[in-house]
Image 1 (cartoon, rainbow, N blue to C red):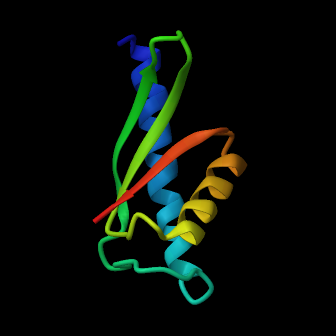
Image 2: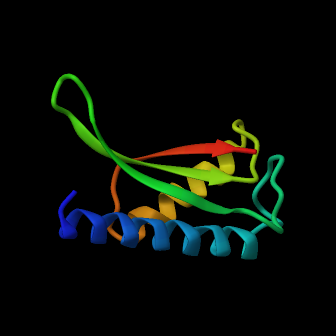
Image 3: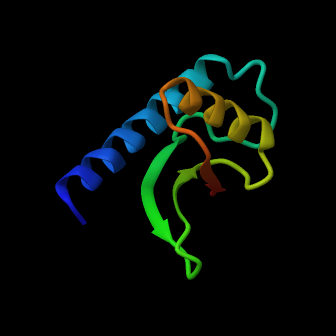
Length: 92
């Protein structure tokens, strides 16, 4: 991967962790099974599928995969930071 690609993933990773901190600050309004003490991004990925489509995905750990409000909040924070259409995978 090029140095520029690494930089983009690093920025995405940092933005995702910042979004998790912002989510914690709003935890009283976000419903779902979430371990707020350890919530964070553990991986930012770029991908290309067999159709040649490309994109980015994140793994956010310490939240139930069905914590939709958290995923929506993180996506909204990433949108504000300039990252559009990011796949967010929540895991324990």
